[in-house]
Length: 124
Image 1 (cartoon, rainbow, N blue to C red):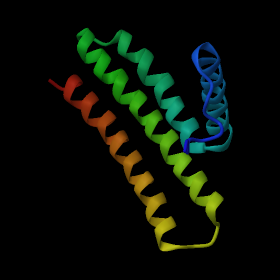
Image 2 (tube, rainbow, N blue to C red):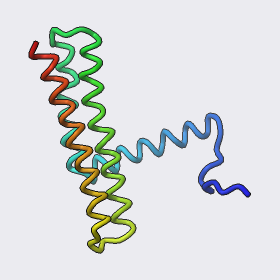
Image 3 (cartoon, rainbow, N blue to C red):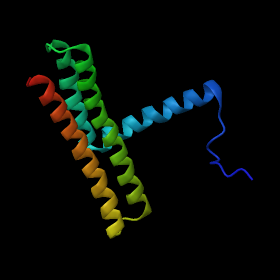
């Protein structure tokens, strides 16, 4: 018995086109509905271009950019977790609180990575 999702099944170029559309929809939803995503996007808009004007190696620049993009990835996951928890129930529950708090903690760690990567590279 095949117990895969009924939404699966597209292959090849059709799957890639669908996945691209879903991704763009996810970005749009996050940007419109999540202030934290907009704030981290702004941080990226400032910091990533700044790397082109700093006296750092290409490897250091890549690491600085990757740290910034990691925060966007974590915020997308955090927002997804919050949406699923809220979809299940808006009732206050300790497990729901834990899930949301852990997502927030993950975002704190990713922002700390930006801070420390940039600090270590720029203060040498």
